Image (tube, rainbow, N blue to C red; front, top):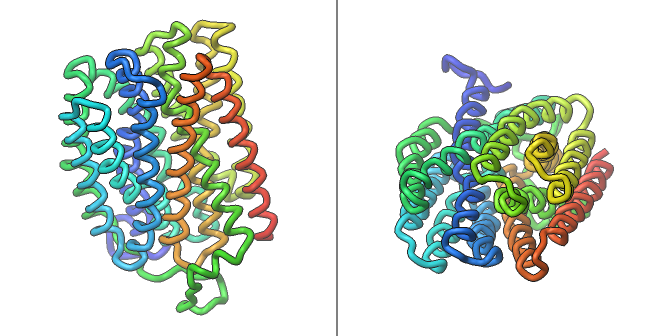
Length: 402
């Protein structure tokens, strides 16, 4: 990876390591919402739709703040931008620990924490990784960085369940807030830096810039927007509802949390493996394999009420991991390839925004369908439909790029 410095590790490798550790914590905390969601529904007595609305509002804030974060990173670099994002996350989690009503959580977790996650999220982080790597390394580099999401789920979902058992859900939020302040903040502010030169296509001038308005004239840009919108909606719909769904079929919460943790471990492996496949065989090959995996996970959940038991959850964890390991990483890698040299912060921030919008709408709609019909059948069908749309749009972009 380039460029090299006098640091003990090459700068690019250090950047990837810091991004991996940061994402590990940020998204470990984010994915622990599925445990809080089950607490809100089963203990507080709030509806599935209302509880999912907390996460959905948060993801709407991600959709707004991620593109702004990308633009700011292009101009100011990652340190001040990510520093602000982590502080907003910590404030949102701290205020969530004092919440007494659903409205309190909508304001604290939904808005404050959501904006913080958008600023420090996958799209903005991908722009930093992409800026330090070449196209032949990019799939693996982003895959390694995003592997932190799977490891975060492995650690923080069971940890959050334990914290709730010890301190209730309010105390758990306070502990997570302190982790942001004392670990994530110094990690991102000290450990990250702006790429030393703007990326460019081979043979193009180093000073090449394309106005963002020019993106609007390109069909592949709009197809990428559709990929971003449908990439994370299916995954986050499962992330939010999976524990409550498993509990509704008779699976104990601790068992369900362990399955989610296993899926997180496998996801970290598949992020890296699919990154290698992407660099070797193409982005579309990796993304399509991931889509097949996600459809397999939907099938396992659909069969769970009829078959029962925990054995079926093992292939679910495997299929989910294959799907999760390609959605965000391959989308941002493709976006970086297509618009290389035209503002990586902006294009990846926009992808992060689309991730957030899809992740806001998906869980909320699934929750509403669950409340209206009494089953998750319609929600699972919606997840499968979003996966199919994302594959079609992804293939359109790769064909236009050839």
